[in-house]
Length: 332
Ligand SMILES: Cc1cc2nc3c(=O)[nH]c(=O)nc-3n(C[C@H](O)[C@H](O)[C@H](O)COP(=O)(O)OP(=O)(O)OC[C@H]3O[C@@H](n4cnc5c(N)ncnc54)[C@H](O)[C@@H]3O)c2cc1C
Image 1 (cartoon, helix red, strand yellow):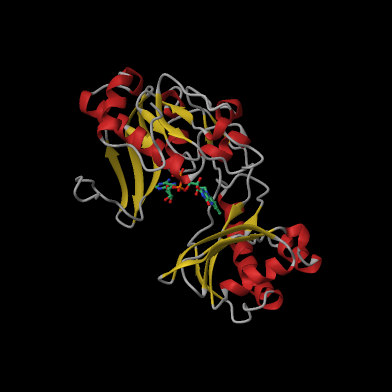
Image 2: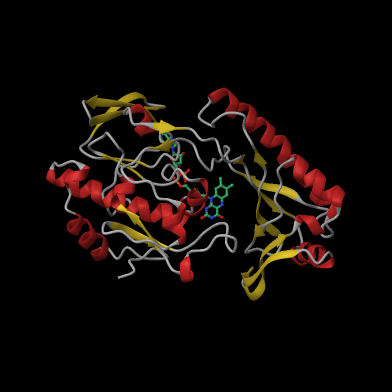
């Protein structure tokens, strides 16, 4: 897809700075094995999660540090039925879904357990390492993820604190395997089949944009005259749900980085309210934001204009022509 679209793909390349002319980004600085480079452009989308480009460009931001960081493991050598039976025996099954697994239909593919109903010593040990019990799988002897969390004392943009968290997470991964082997029938041969190469964050910098989506916007299912996508999921359901099972809108303004003319933000770096962010940070919403921001950036670059000079109707027409769908869609 990227090749077909003529995208220049760069890997192992870190964005490290911005070349500014007033409130206009002229280019970015990057570092890779090839050394330091400057890449010039007309329009820029920050989808680094951390908000690195916006910060380098001088945008306003805060670092809420309101989530733990994580490094999940894929676990092999396990028995999905017995994992479920363990929770069922304690009347603790809190999530349960069936689907295709190892080529067979109607198999268990998602399980979670309610901690307060499980053996106290197991829960206490799991709590110490930030281990969650939820997992999904499409293979008979495999949990696709068991999540280990660490709450860092400072924002994950802090290099040295992030290194400490990386090391701690590795220890927690090994301990999680010990706990699975000890407490869960069918997991005596559990082993780490994969880890993420680095820790993953749920929030880095919070970048100030022209509109900040509120929890009220989300729960009331509010739409805006400049919607670029409609989204309808909340991580904290059923406690928090969108009115009438509907959708709310992400307005174009929510992607415009305040004070910078040609920079869009997309992904986990928008939305200050923690409970609203628990919806907007989800992957499908981030994808929709990315498509909208990328489309707007391409239109602006072609016309040589800034982000706020783009007529909304042109953006909407292009998104609809590109069939901006797949969980993300326009309500009307
Ligand atoms: C443990 C965990 C579990 C989650 N579970 C779910 C779930 O079940 N469902 C769900 O919908 N969401 C889930 N989320 C949330 C969701 O995954 C994130 O909010 C979402 O992926 C954020 O997308 P993003 O594009 O903003 O950032 P990312 O997906 O983090 O992408 C940012 C990219 O930018 C790159 N990057 C960063 N800085 C630079 C730089 N300076 N130069 C070059 N590249 C850079 C990174 O390497 C990365 O590839 C989970 C998150 C975590 C941490």
